[in-house]
Length: 116
Image (cartoon, helix red, strand yellow):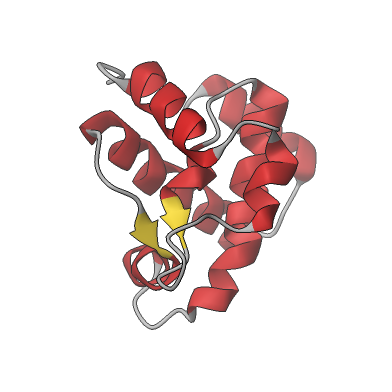
C-alpha cells in the first residue's frame, strides 16, 4: 500500500471494513484512470466494489476516496463514477475541487498513465 494512503488511514482509525472498501474503491478508480477508460455508473462501481452493494451505498466510499485525493493532492478519481441517467458525477465530486468532471478525468488519466 502507498505510504501516503497508509498514513492517512492510520490517522483516521476507521473500522477495517470501511478502510478496505475505500482502498478497494480507490484501486478500481485508479485502474480506470490508468486505462483511460470511460466512466462507470454508480451501479457498476458498487457491483465491482462489492457484489450486491446498492449503488447508493457507494456514496460514502466515494466521499472517503474524494477526501483522501484532496488531502493527498492526488487527482480526483471520483469523477469516473457517473449517474446512469445524466452521465454526470454527483455534486459531491465537485466538493473535492472546482474542476469540471471532464477536466478532472483528463488530469487523472495524465496523472496515472504509467503509474504502476
